[in-house]
Length: 59
Image (cartoon, rainbow, N blue to C red; front, side, top):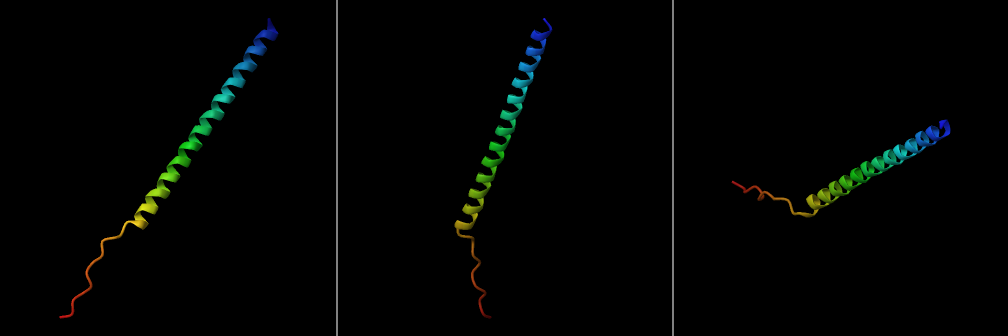
């Protein structure tokens, strides 16, 4: 009986550890996705021509 409880507890810890690892992996994937999106936003800003002001006219 005691060994069954120990085995159950070990199995539960193993499952919780796997869940934590997956949660960390998903958090890392989300950060990576956000970084990629930020990079594309920056690239878009660089590539889209900026509004240019007309040159000053001599008086």
